[in-house]
Length: 250
Image (cartoon, rainbow, N blue to C red; front, side):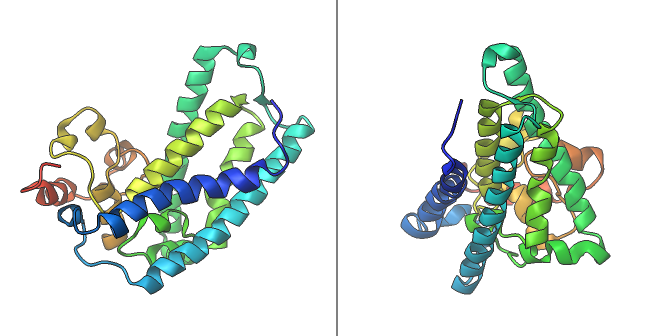
């Protein structure tokens, strides 16, 4: 499985702008009034804040692309465990490794996220928290140091764990979709979501929005179980979710 040299430079920005752009165009432009009842924080961020999110997201995309080219180099010189043929490890391993990437990333994100919230290290993460009322463009609005922290685990894992390109692609799109939903600013999941099996483990937009507005809890990216296990889930999460859904089942 060979890819042209320009593949990362196109795929990484395209993934971000297509997914974040689609959610932004629906909820902040074309259907802004139609979905206003689902807005978590009733105020809308200023244009200055949105432009700032876009600017730092562009910087993050450049850093992510550089890391991707480093992975290309390492892979081309047989330093990584990235493999081409599914038959080398089989379909069950492909599925397992994809799930492993998602769960490991969430744990890595939780740990590094909490570390960056320590007072002496918060300068690394401060840029992201300037988006108190985030939009989809806040998903990648990081300082350069944080951008490196957010992505460096992937090439390190690839040095030791066999990973197929499909596993990396599924993870990357799942990451982008969940990251955008977390920063959407609208609660799009249904009224009884928190009582469902998926709702007990999957992070909602309200869950991460509380982190941005209160800054002291809800450190996960995909799942809520690390916050629950380690005692950092906002005690008012359910109340905040149900308040939004009280008169709006959708």
